[in-house]
Image (cartoon, rainbow, N blue to C red; front, side, top):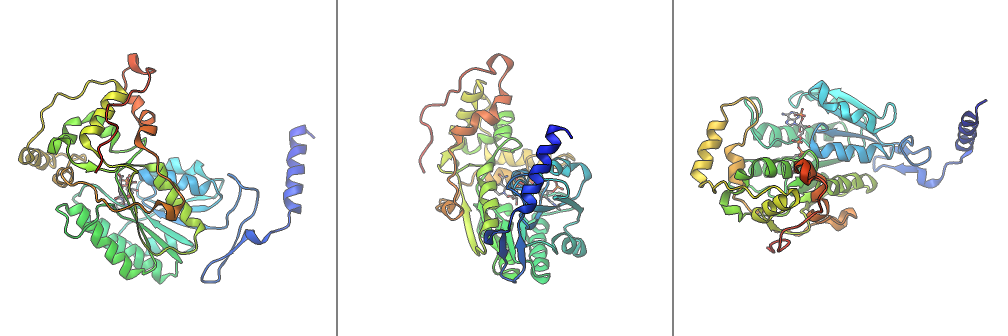
Length: 362
Ligand SMILES: NC(=O)c1ccc[n+]([C@@H]2O[C@H](COP(=O)([O-])OP(=O)(O)OC[C@H]3O[C@@H](n4cnc5c(N)ncnc54)[C@H](OP(=O)(O)O)[C@@H]3O)[C@@H](O)[C@H]2O)c1
């Protein structure tokens, strides 16, 4: 017997001998017992089953990684085969279960969530397509998931909305997010509604877009104020919900500081060593006309509603981070991680320099 096999056999013997402790058992409000087993880590089994709608998106990949590494089984509904492949190695064998689904198919939704203790709805779209309008995705889709979750007896629903969701907003996107929240609350009164601000990270449409298309972030002379938040902090807050029995209500997750787009463009330019863009600030009617014309192409292009959103400052509500046990990081802490790829080869390893006047207060 090889030495490594002997070590493995000894480990197995120890694990098999291990007595269960009281903290290995969690009883859900419907009296369903959840039994965890194994040592903490990749191969542990937390006993929980979770469904994440919108699993193929930006935020979901970080949240699923955090859940799966605690040994939670995650059901990942997907539409297109290749979009969920990166999720498979995030958990041990059999822990990431992919299921095909359609937002308009009640049976598929029920199949996806019927064994889960907690359902996360991270489905959202920044722009409308010919098949799905904001109303289909953020209102009817969200309501459908909430109704079916309530019907099949899922204990908890976490619905992700947006910090600026408001029924009186000039943006159709924000209005649809607000209406979606109301429908979810009506169908599933104990739902936890999460309102994150704009998120930055590796696959974001924030830093990457700002670096590639500064002209679209100069609208309103860069004076619009926003509160960007690190995607990892939001993912951690969502993952922490697993440990709390119930948390009905609406929770805002903005970044720790308010800043203008002008400051953020300076930050991008300073961290990447790329000169500030010399393009002029487009007047709103011109930007709107260009965005409308851009809707004729078949790939996602800046929509008129996104132009409208560039003129709307983030809501100034207080953050509810304490409820999740997370303290959000400052954007300067992570800027280089996500912006280094936008540096030229000559500047790749140069020190990180921040612009003057770190951020503009609200
Ligand atoms: N990113 C931000 O800065 C930000 C800020 C505040 C709030 N939020 C909200 O947070 C949630 C997650 O954001 P994200 O950035 O991770 O979004 P994302 O990367 O755009 O991913 C959206 C997810 O929703 C799915 N989806 C969109 N339309 C769908 C449809 N018609 N049918 C089925 N699935 C559909 C996508 O599936 P496919 O891969 O199949 O398209 C994808 O899994 C969203 O609700 C978003 O509105 C995001």
